[in-house]
Amino acid sequence: MFRKFLINCQDYIDNYSVHLINTLFLSFSVIIITFGSLIIAVESFLPTFIKKTIRYGKHKCKDDQNSLLNRLEVPKSWFAHFYIFAFGWSICAFYLVLKGIIMHNAAPDAVIAFLDLFGGGRNQRKVLIKSNEALITTLLMTLQCIRRFYETNFVQIFSSKQKIHLSHYIVGYLHYFGAILALLINTEGFVKDSLPSTFSFTKITLIQYMCLALFHFSWSQQWKTNMILVNLRKDSKTGKINSEHHLMPRGGLFEMVSSPHMFFEIQIYVAVMGILYQSLTWKLIVIWVTGNQIVNALLTHKWYKENFKNYPKNRKAIIPFLL
Ligand SMILES: NC(=O)c1ccc[n+]([C@@H]2O[C@H](COP(=O)([O-])OP(=O)(O)OC[C@H]3O[C@@H](n4cnc5c(N)ncnc54)[C@H](OP(=O)(O)O)[C@@H]3O)[C@@H](O)[C@H]2O)c1
Image 1 (spheres, protein in one colour):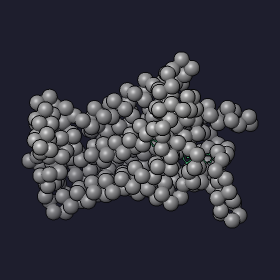
Image 2: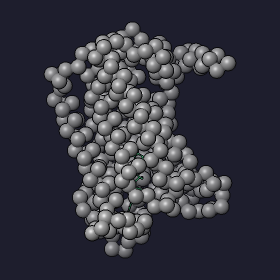
Image 3: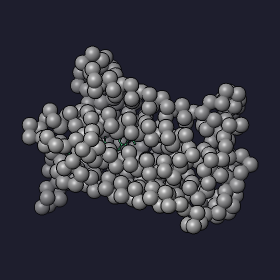
Image 4: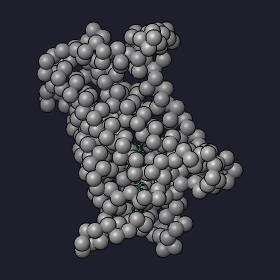
């Protein structure tokens, strides 16, 4: 019965060329840009469910505390769960790309059928990404997922009171599910009748080296920024956790913006886009991540200004000197 259902879905996707991953990221982008802009411009006129869907963590919407929507909240520390998933999922993708290149074999039929289902159907998927680029970008995203897995599960200090809406929790899984598949959907060896090509450092272009440098810079700076947040809640002498409060961050790029970790998040996805410039799916992911991080950073900035009277006036929300 399930098999019949899958065959029907596949036929529908083939006939109508439905690209589920593009649809997912396009929908996320439209929702965050529309609702995010409304919250920033005319929040007081909006229904509670919109505010609760967009706001989370320290700037979460506190209206209507007893509503059904409040019962759909989970601890913010559950962020750690979807990084466990992202960690495993990205390693699977990296392994498949690496194995394909070493063995010079196409991906297993089941993987190709799975990608057909999510990437536009059997007739629509075309090769746009070379094996060289796929290996580099799956490695980069695996490094990002491993670092976030380590941070959220072993280093970050989440306060026990902070909550996220169930929708944020689900979006976290969908984001990593789709972003990792996006690295394979149009890649040599993962599209029917194509084979992986060989990997060579000599094939890496100057622009791709520049993207690698941007990724390395943003990745390491995001770690440093997250450590500044961790250390705010620790005793500087003993290293023991002494607070669950939100304090005013200082040092590094915090001197210029309220959410440098979100600025570096955008740069990480832009760096990968520079290598995967042919992929429409990755461009949609960049629009979604940029919209999401800007909205969250603007709300965070407003929260800091409301809660710290001496908040530095020259500090911007997310982009130094600009926004
Ligand atoms: N790719 C995407 O679309 C996407 C989406 C969401 C997040 N992210 C990334 O995930 C990372 C975490 O996001 P987030 O929204 O959880 O960031 P966040 O609200 O800044 O929280 C990060 C960590 O720092 C703590 N913290 C924040 N502000 C603090 C303060 N003033 N004093 C002391 N501790 C503080 C938080 O504790 P509490 O939990 O107790 O507040 C949490 O443990 C970021 O790097 C972000 O870029 C990416």
